[in-house]
Image 1: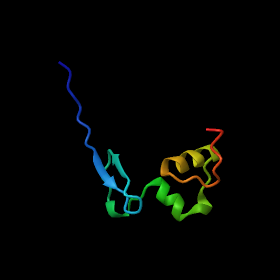
Image 2: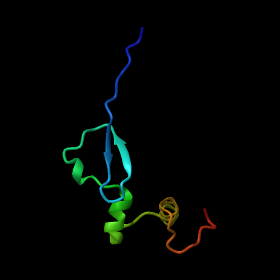
Image 3: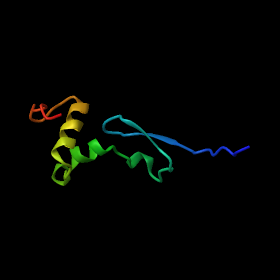
Length: 72
């Protein structure tokens, strides 16, 4: 009979967006964890994602920056 492996998961919540996410590693400072969306909101000059990814994330958050969603 095969052994079952157990993977420990940890749930954390972003303090800015209240988004919940799950990781397999325990965070040393869970209060400092923020979501990707929150990071790019805080640092827009470092947002080097492709335009179609930016549009998808804007649609998920409910606000579109330019209103053009025809290419999606």
